[in-house]
Image (cartoon, each protein chain N blue to C red):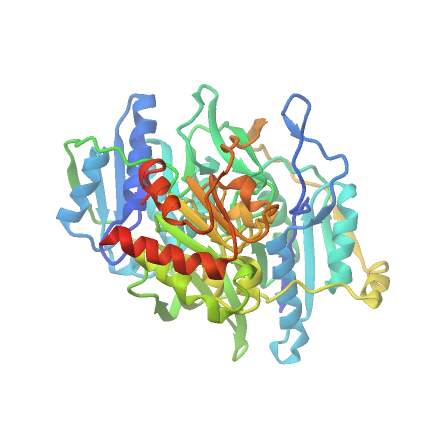
Length: 322
Length: 249
């Protein structure tokens, strides 16, 4: 019996998300009195792999096959499923990000394993195996009992603190035969954002709504985000109007984020918007309407015109950066 | 080419969720039921693809797993423009149950593209599309924000962490769609509503399958502390609180 965790890498590097997953897996393993095995797929150097040990991975299985350069959920699932069975995994931890959402359901079918998706806390109990899971877009949380022998949990990003344990770890390079007939995804083109902090990874997010009045008014908002080392986001009407790219849309049908700090500028706080940001640790609202529902979700609020408040806020941040 | 669009019947997204039966279920009194937002966008895109005759799409069928009370939502999908509908007559218990039902229908009826929303706004599971594809042993492309036809072949935009990829897979496949797939959901016109009344809704009985999970209790999200207001003339005070009280900057 072991806890298995799939750690994704980006061009051979792990990021906070990967360490969060291993920290969470360690927490689950401790409850079950067992060990953590981490799986990495792709070309990752030993020095990078060994970082997973800091968060409690006792064993790291590294799979580096030319055939797995393109993400194909069928092929990845087949690899993870084989390793899960070999390792006698009882709980499998995967991120709730896009690739996790592609792999977890397939793995569930293969292993007849129930899934607790979007968990943000350690299991509530082991017997029955009960997890705490977001439902109704954050308006309710469910206690979900997983009845199958093997359990799959997908972890919501930025929901679990990193825990350094400094475990002794061993790295195993696994030569695995990938069934070529499963590789059906052909990638014809890739466009990557570079040099920008990704919205899902950002600790600080500054977000604008219709109260920003025009796409031309964004520079002070972007400057604030840059000064704070954060990312920019927007509400749905803003992306629907084409004022900002749709990748920035946070809300029920857009991105679901959980930064440490979310600054909502000129956003009224419709239920659908709150669904995407309610897991933020702190919310700041800047809005000219004192009755806007965003103030009910916020811990700190400024009632005022965004166009007047933002430049002052930018100046104040520059002042403390000195 | 035939497209199947999977639709979920969910509470309107502005619903204030209340619990019933000792917090073990949702109080459905007064809830307005709608097509899951991502599924509505999927359906819209499927219909747009069909509108262009060059794409050679013969039909767009919607499928729903649910009891007869979901009929108004199915009729709405038909009013928007779906050609016909299939309802698997069962109260869904979990994603594995729903996926098993849809996979069974696809095995019998053959579709080339199966479209699923990336999640439903009620259980937020993101599971059904992936499960269907694994049950059928066919490819899936997840988190797609675009689909079009080039030389008779579907080409998709897949959203990855920090970018996009243009991908193709052979048919049949499952397209798991996210926001961006269509600009805005299509709205039913009066003519569509009239026509929907006579469009066929086939009711099929479920296959037996054991759900793998069950919800035993609901709880409300933890309440947040009341908002502290800062003078608009003095935003430095906000920074002071963020630095020393919240410790987030």
